[in-house]
Each structure stands twice: as C-alpha cells, then as structure tokens.
Length: 280
Image (cartoon, rainbow, N blue to C red; front, side, top):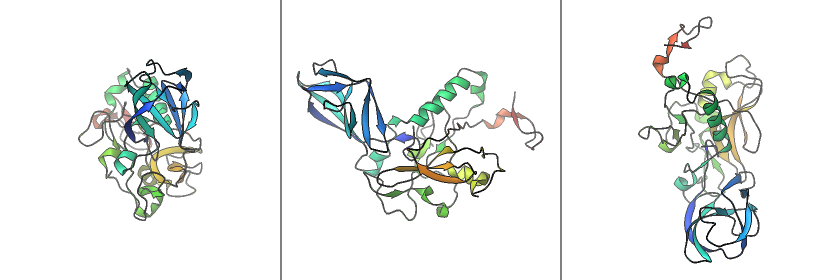
C-alpha cells in the first residue's frame, strides 16, 4: 500500500500480445517515479526473447528506464510472441486508477518497522486489525475525474470540507483480514496517521508545538490532497506542527501507527501523570 494520495501506487492493467524478438531488457521487478510518470527496471538484463523471460517485466524496448508503459510477460504464444499485461500509470476509470495493486515505498518502510519491532513478539497479541483510512473521495469543489492526468481534488485538498471520522469508500479502508468493513489489502495491521486525526489532536494551527503529534520535523500522513496533472500531493505534518500538504517527490519522515485492542490498556488511568499502558 502506498500513497499515490495515500497507500498505493495505482496502475491500470490490460492484456495484449507482444512481439518480443528484439534485444530487449527484462527484469524481475521495477520502480515507478510518480514525479515523471516513468517506470525503470530493477536489475535488468538484455537478451533476445527465447521464452525464459516469462514472468518478467520489460519496457519492450532496448531501454531499461524512462518508459511510460511497462509489460509483464504472462504466457508464450510463439518463440517471438507472448501475452503480456500492460502496466500503465493510471486506469481509464476511477475504480482502475484507485485499485490497490502495487506496494508503495512508504508501505514497505512501515512493514519493515512492524517486522523488526512487533512481528513474533508478545506485543502482537495487543494489536487490533482496525481500519486505516486513506480517503480518496472527492472534495466538494473537485471537477476532475480522478483518472489519467485529470486535475483532481480529494477530500483533504482544503480544510473547508471539515473533519470527519468516517471513511466513505471501502476500498480506502485498509485492513489485514477484515474484508467486510475494510479492504483486506494490508500485510500487517500498521499504517500512518491521517489528517482528520492530526486536526483533532491540534494540528489545525500553523504554530502549534504543544500537542503530542508535534515533533519539530516534517512527516507524512496517509491523506491524499490531490493530483495536479503532474504531481500527486499528500497531506503532511510540518516542522511547526501544522497539517500542510506537499507533492510526493519530497523526502519526509515516516511515523508508523498501530491500533491497540481496547482490553490491552490494563494499567494507568489516562491522565498525564499516569497514562494508560499496555499490560496483562
């Protein structure tokens, strides 16, 4: 999960036969640059197609980077032709564009943190599989379609739409196993704070260093704000504590968030001097 506006890089897919007889580059994995809208193959090797490239990605060219369309070699027709999924930057419908297909860099980082600090420890028993909201519903002033390079405004494009503690689209409710309330697309029950939570905590002020989400550093939330036609924009927490927004080509901090089961808080009374603590 990631965040093109949240937790996922989203690519529409379709199947088409490709002639792959030329000396193309092939690789087992790829990266996608949201700033340029281009794919690059990771660890690519160049070879004439001979069938051994099944299950690999290719730009279908003699280049391994800078391609706007990528192909996944699914099955072979002849020694020179194979069926391939076309992986493009966006789909042609809202559902295709916002499908949760490819893990983002930021999801990889929070998953790594979970594996290092929580997975296989006694703390796992305290973690709840409750949703993380990556709200990609449209802002009331939006006129875009949310597809292609359409200039699109999501709910948190401005603060005028207000705080809400609901998540309208099931596809935006990230969970691990719960596919009734959520989407079941997470690997682990961990995510990021969203902008509604930042505002409720005190991040509505441009100069608030006195609330618990203030760190003095920039870090990302998981709330998309919009797509400008060239850049995806996501809400963040600025160094002064305010919930601003920035394009996803910026390098900001990551603060993982987990949800605790209600019966995990056995110690403390919730006061500043005696906060709740996990216990048995």
